[in-house]
Image 1 (cartoon, each protein chain N blue to C red):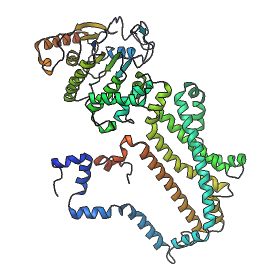
Image 2: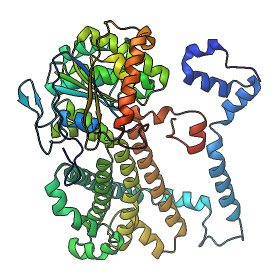
Image 3: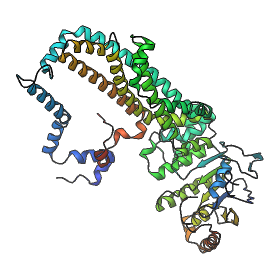
Length: 249
Length: 297
């Protein structure tokens, strides 16, 4: 994969994701993890190779792959309710059905009673939950998440990870989760794929089989810490740039 | 000063707490603030009016240069029927030009954003036309469209068109990509993205453009009427000038200003109604103190 005539960004990526699997794409800045996610989203086409979903080739964005962004992408001009209804409205669902499903999702994310609020009236963490509910409402085959919690403060981030895990353990959909945070990747996923090198490729493909439902205690467990150290080491070896601590993917 | 930040205050919401803590310093001060607040904006106009009144007393200035307020009032009474019909003509011309220019400008701006073909076809031409000084076109418009109402309407429409098309193109260009990307991942089509993302996102900037257009519309109308018109307020103004009736001219200046202010306030109301989601109407506290906010009264 390359942008225009630029150098290759990703090369030799062969990744199979099972239905219902939670896969994290981990890597330093510039390793191409966000590029890979954008390719799956269909924002652009790979210069070589293909992406297939349920047997069909991905050529453009579609509601079978909804996305949660790092930036605040909740529409500020719609109320919470209308944001969550958005995907259903695009699909042309009847109003009653839309309201019912959005209502359930608003309850699921713990914003009961705030359906008529404007996004500006909510905290950053609440808006992220609205964003998630909006993506879930589309009932996608794959949920794409691009460092969704990276812009939040540490405490809100941990709380949202836990909440999101609770929601995911109930709905169990396929998730592709881009992050540069090793702990986040291990804590949430069934599988961590470490991307690195230039052009980027798969460095480590690690299966994470901690029991579910997972709890906060997992973060301090010995095995968790061992895997974390191992991934950190691989990440450092594969680091493509000096500024690997930077936020941007 | 009493401490107003105790926990019980939070029950009314932080906004209410802020408002209360601002007003509740002492009962005396609160009373004074309540009585004085509506008067404060009027202090400067009252002072100016007084200055006008004093300066025009016997012998200080010639009434030909600065007519006294009572002369202006007398003129208003004397020529009221002529004024009313002139006013009606001017309002019709400005409103027609404003609507035609506003609608076409917005449509063209949206089409530019929507279609790459249209953009590459017209962008250069529009960029070349934009800096042409509109007032320079008045004689040409009079030659083309005669001395009736049409030159004024066309000029107003052209001015508003240029402002609104530019505002629309710029604001469409500035729509935050992340919203468009989000809509795309939900399978939204180009039309759906325009309806649910682009148009709401550009609304605040479009409404500022409309407010700006209202001011320009009156200015263009006055200029066009002064140069070539057989009716309307500007025409009355030209006639008054020939009679050296300064009071009449001042009267019409006041009427034009009042109309422009009314138009501006209407646009402001509309903006507050249509963009409640931005929260500009409810901004309070230090930031609003420093940069101002939309007037909420």
